[in-house]
Image (tube, rainbow, N blue to C red; front, side, top):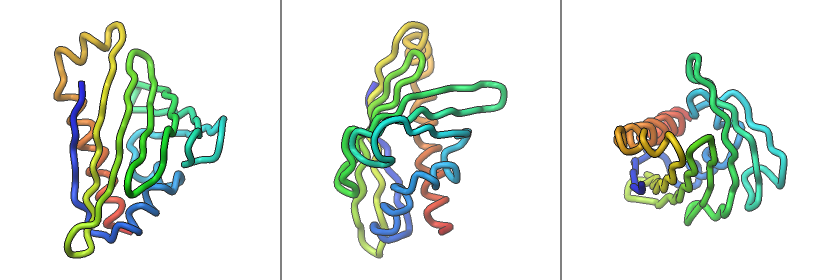
Length: 144
């Protein structure tokens, strides 16, 4: 499954990229994030690997984040691996008229085991979650 979603942020691109690249800010806009454990490389840089722990009510999830490339605003490529799901995200940002920034996120999912069934039965769930993440970041960025 692959799709692209975008949002317009009412902030200049340099500010948006700075907020996005600051790992401490993830806790402020990434819902459910409880911890990030960097175990390889330098945070935010190519080759960095981190374990991320999320909690949504009673449900908990761990995922492995690997930064493949970070050349924002042009492009950032990140992989996320969790039980049953591998996701590669292509992020880009572009400056648009009026000192605004367009934040683009292309998501490519590969499902394994039971998650294949979930993706087949509820593909809109993935887009809804991505849209929520983009909206959370937009709201965070515009409030800073």
